[in-house]
Every structure is written in C-alpha cells, then in structure tokens.
Length: 191
Picture 1 (cartoon, rainbow, N blue to C red):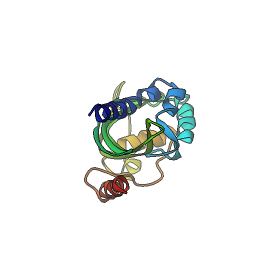
Picture 2: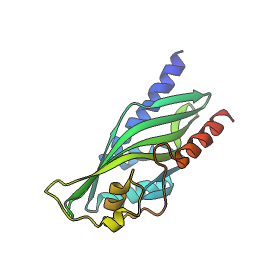
Picture 3: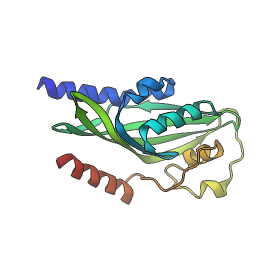
Picture 4: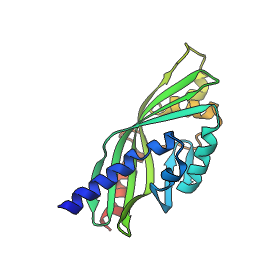
C-alpha cells in the first residue's frame, strides 16, 4: 500500500511540476520527462527536450503564459500509469493587449524507470476557451478565429498572432480525437 501511495504522490508532483515552465526553471522542467519523452500541444509537437528549447524562446517574446494545474486522476498498472489533469492556460501578448484563457486537460502516459516516475508522452485535450482584454477591448480578426475549433480558438489566435502558429487540429472535449487518444492510452497501459 505504501508504494501505491508513494507512486500516486510522485505522479501528482510531476503534474504540478509544470510550474517550472512558468518560472522559467528549464532544468527542473526537463526533469519531468523521460529523455525520449514527447509532447503534443497547440503550438508544438515533438521531443520534449526541443519543447523546452522552444519554450525558452517563447519566454523571450511578448507572449506570457501561466498554467493553473489541479490534482490528477491517476490509473497505475505496474510501471505504467495514465494521468489526466485539468489545466487552465492563461496567455497574454503584452504588445497586443490581448489574452486568452483555455480550459484543457493534460493526458499523460507515464513510466517508472529505475525507480523514478516521469512523463513519456503528453497530449492536450481542449475543453473551452475565451479571450481576455487586460486593457480594454481590442479588435480580433474573426476570419482567423474561425480557422480553429471553438474549444481552443482564442488560445490558437493569441499564439498565431505571437508567432507560434497552430499547424493542425487537436483533441477537443468529447470529440473523436479525444476518444482515440484515450483508447490508445488504455491499450498502451495494459500491454
């Protein structure tokens, strides 16, 4: 029983460890993932090590982000686990005076290697989003917003206008892509 509780606590610490991205603590952020770990989010897909490098570039831009992370739902099977964690992504392009809030979920495949849990694969599922206007209403190009699914259109718009374009469609709440991600995850967990 003690090991199970320790495993759950270690996994929860990995999820809340996302604060290292907001704090620009790049070394500790890198420690959340296995060296072969990957990530798929609106503005980046690929190796997690490359994601950290691109996040460093993003932090030097006019785009600011903050992630509010909740406790995860965790399913463990031996040295494998799945964690699904609510996250609110708050973004603002300070030069545009435009921001967004995106309610999403991180869907993580985790492995325990050499006694240590780390993320192997992170995918994001987007539930809903809205624009924020920190200094008053600014004009938004409705044609650009319409190119993206409603659930993450505000986030994609702010990312695109900040130089971090979204290049494909991502999973949204109760959609076919979410169902496929979860089916693949369950298959991976039991193999």
